[in-house]
Length: 199
View (tube, rainbow, N blue to C red):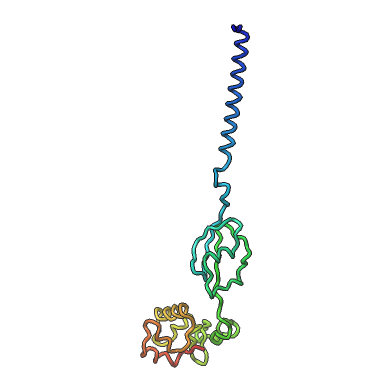
């Protein structure tokens, strides 16, 4: 069957329209596919990074799902027995970059040395620094480094070692515990015994 030029032109235009339409539909399909997240990405929820420190077994930075709470962070870090979690708002939502510090529980008041922890009952040190001198003796459990330097034979370095030992091991339970401080021997202890107290 022989087609005239008019019919041939119409068929050519129709074929071009079909090809153009299919091409446009394919381009739209590819654009829509590119805009969709890859498989697995839409299933992965956003996360927050938080720093957990204090009375925990594994302090450090943790990545948790968005919507997690303080309780989730401290559980991941492992709560130590001395942790005072009651001071935290465990239901608080975590924010990215937040630091969660778990404080340690303070000793009971009746376990503290006399005058310790109460600024209104703590005795005044001989040098006025609040170090805790009582009855002419310096309280080695509350005295700061400056007050300790007023003791015979105690210089700045030894005073700092006494404070460091106390912070690491807790209050002295007896004057003789000073022997555990590097630089204090029997002779030095005898020199200090009449000038110090733990109460």
